[in-house]
Image (cartoon, rainbow, N blue to C red; front, side, top):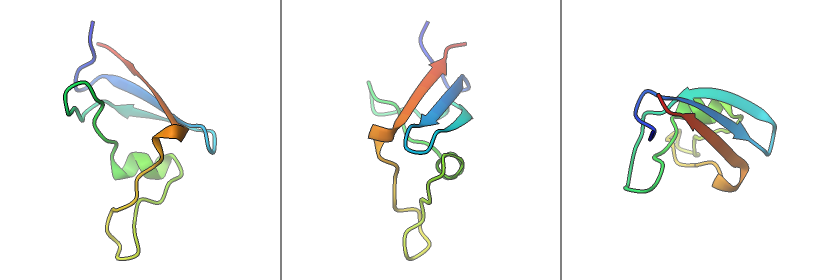
Length: 71
């Protein structure tokens, strides 16, 4: 079974030990996972806002692990 929008995900930040539950909702491009929300980044302990108050700064994928549970 493959994952689909609406499936449960667990996301772990190895840099600070934070574990967050999320809903898998972003797909793309083919063969790659999409991106997380601003709220997910904040729950993982990351400030995604740049100097102008816009979302500009992502989390290093090297510190993020995730598991998506199909169905």
